[in-house]
Image (cartoon, rainbow, N blue to C red; front, side, top):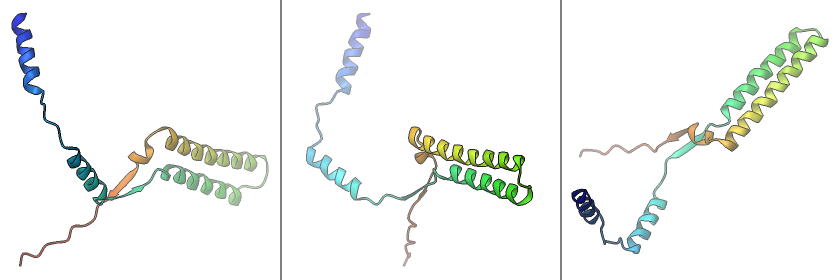
Amino acid sequence: MDINHDLDEKLKNALTTCEQVPSELNRNLEKLLQTEKSPWKISLWFLPGLANTCLWAAAALFIILFLESGFLQKTLLFWCFDMILSGVLLSGAAYHFTDIKASLSITISERRKKECPN
């Protein structure tokens, strides 16, 4: 057991360093990282709610145009508007409680200019 303890002590001593990075170098690196242009990000978190709204609005329009007014039409229209509201609320809850904004985003990087070999 004493051999393992000695080996642990030697490894710990070998891996610890007393070198400190100068604070000025850290500040310069932070400035460089902040000034560097980051690529554009387009967030698409609203698309599921928008697609849901368009789908159920089209269904409601179809119901208005092709069903005679009555109990069935009113019930189906209520169903469509209820589904629209629930889709919007679910998208809002997903935005608030999850990382949907980060996971549904497209990164657009700037195009590099081609260098002429001449």
